[in-house]
Image (cartoon, rainbow, N blue to C red; front, side, top):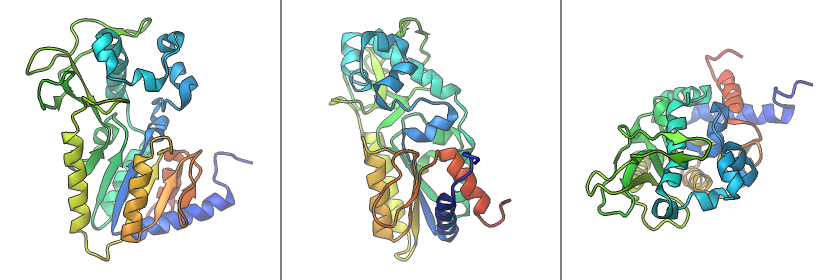
Length: 289
């Protein structure tokens, strides 16, 4: 049996999902860490997965939740920027997998277009050609910076930031990114664990744009959610997709190899994002079978 091909039950669900996409007036695209796995990005699922990606942190026995904490920017800025600088460089160098292009096609075919809601901070949707005006990054973006203090409410692009990392120790070399206002240490504009210094204005504005888009849709517009790789540990994406489809009467297509379950009526696909999206693409009108 070819395990790369969907099972008969999966194929039936794929066909229902493809029909829902074809009939949708608008799409909400939800994405969690699992969306980037097919691009070669780590999803940090469990400490073992995190430590495989970062051996220097494994040697110290620091969990992802403990590492993704703003205290490191106060206690050990070079270590903090070693971790986030490596991720910034990795995301800049990563090419989004073909599933992103498929989602763009789906959104382009929907009469009212598509909006993205993601908990990922990697900027992969924008890198794949999605317009920034139609993306919500609910946990912020590594491609934007803020003062670590913070001294002000400024949020600015990290485009000019260059971070060199010594991978054997995961420590960043000086100079570290600095606040453009006060000149002291800057940090990524990312919501971390136990984070009371995160400036959420950019993400809040994105969420307001999503709310405005939804409110401008006709009352009878069917909004279908295609959710990829969003888990239950931090359920922001799952809850948003469930809320919107419940309110707008559209289908919820949940793609997740381990946590595809959902509310009654969910079209659950226990598959990776790229594989599921390829299958859906082949089933839509005008696509090769």
